[in-house]
Image (cartoon, rainbow, N blue to C red; front, top):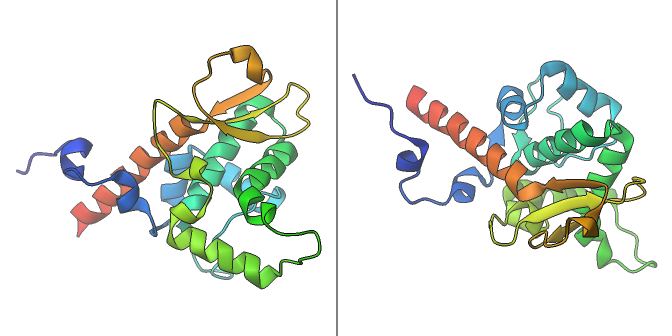
Length: 196
């Protein structure tokens, strides 16, 4: 009988994001990692404006989600638990994910759907294409998603929360949320590997 090793032992010095980056995950793996059920996932995919980078494989074919999608859905769930405002959470997270993409574009420059799809494909290939909030994991300087108490907008920031009054309203420690997602996804990969 083989003894089950801890996740830390299984990693054996490998960086967690190196093992997760570029992989695809099933809906079941996404639901476990993002802590959503089938009904919630269906609603997120069909009834919100949350932008995901993977595309549907077509009717009757199982969708494979990339890492950035799992992260977006986990952060969406965290915001929904605090605000119960799906429209605001989706639009805010879309802004966080796509802000860097659009910040460099001039008002005269039009970004085509194909260019956006190409950028999304690169985010699926490497999480480090996305803003640092999605791939930096430091306890000393965690990433936060926050908004004012009126839910007028959503911003992200990095650094210790020295003054909790600075960010009154909705505050989500994105680093902590995504670290939990990482652990759940690493467990899924470990189960896959042990099954083969």
